[in-house]
Image 1 (tube, rainbow, N blue to C red):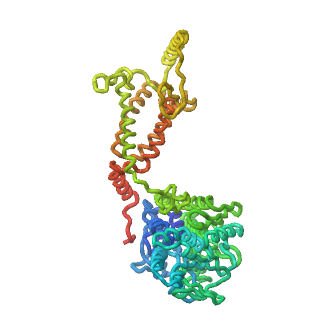
Image 2 (cartoon, rainbow, N blue to C red):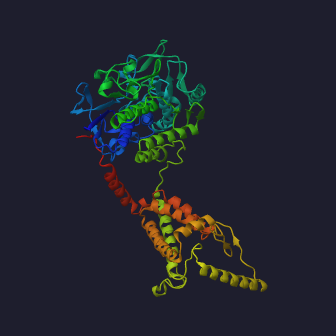
Length: 640
């Protein structure tokens, strides 16, 4: 078979989903290559742009480098360029910098804001459809509040501090939710009364969040009103001026900030491709997402650009779920054409809708049965976002998302209200780290010295040392050792009986989390559970193996102590310590008074090795080296 060139235009949700699926399914087909073309070298998580615009996260939190997403995918070629035309007859794509032949073409250029030709939106308003839009809004809001803080005219000041969002769909409500969260911080930064900042949502319809169940939408409406957000309903905007907007009823709202989120249409870039158009600049596709009229040319339309009526007069919605499902439909059809498999017609499966109203509150409607609000709705949204990274097989960006959303957020703007995101000074944990390392060193060295003298090396490795005699582990004994133990137990019983006859009182173990003079500390477990004994006997089936592990454990503890003292691999050392202590507890060889070992280990996992420790240099070097080896070097452009 001749080489099959698959070209995907657009690295949005649809383009990424399709390319990932085809790269995986066609991995063994050396004659099939995929070229992904986008004007940017990164994928933007469009559903989280409001977080950038609202000052919650930095732009890189929603930008995902394409090379990191497709690392080690040898059948995927990345090209950073702008498509200017498609020669459908000769099957060649033209870009600003070159041209690319194709056997299969998937167009996923996405959509763009629809201003419905409302005068002044382009000139005086702001849209939220790209990372550039989000950054522009963010800077404008900061600049506007700063100007208001210096304005003495009450009317001008009020207009400057009035922020209006047009549209009450998901994007609009999530945007105003971020402004609710940001308002107090802005006021504090620029030394104004937060009550002066006015937030409004203007909607042409009588209700908000019209894709949600009415009860869920009602909860969101009540929450917004509780946060002093004014909902201006049944009020289409007819014009946007520099310092005010005009509503259909003739009234005006003085403002210098109008964020337009009222509609979506297919991107105008696709209008020149000569494919059958539909309303809203979208392109007509059949049930396999093939461009209608060009099925024989193997041209596919996916994402927000695709217009397919699964039901009469009801095209696929312009949401992420539909974008990914149209992409999978097209990808499966291409895969079937190449490998001879069976194609799958499009069938929408929309599992629910979620909307955040700020970082701490939201509403969710799942499977038309489960209704969540508040904390649980936000948690569900985070779970869905994390699942997205799992679906596109990006563990790196899954971790980055968690860091940005839970651990690096400022001003308490996360679902845990900042409890997980405080960046403490690890300098103060250095003494604890060194002390903890010394504890492990002393415990390990005691096992070497035994009953010898610490300053006399010739007395080490003798009586009482872990390097002589039988194993100390309770689950490693043979028949003779068991007999010896039984004999010893008998002798001990006789001795105890004699002591009792002499009037001596046996010392009882006492529960406590710190050692008390005169008390015998209580072990966490009196003896190892049967299942743990059975497991350990698999790893240590005889005395020779047990003695090897016993000696190895001493050197392991010394290495652990050294790592903690010098601050090398502190996170890993602490994690291993936790596992080690749990193992000791299960073996019946650990006391409650030392249970603090576990909690200190957790405390040291906060990066304590980066202050007066080798982790300050070693960990960044490892991250950079491994990242370069696995992901390559990120570039501003690919395909050159």
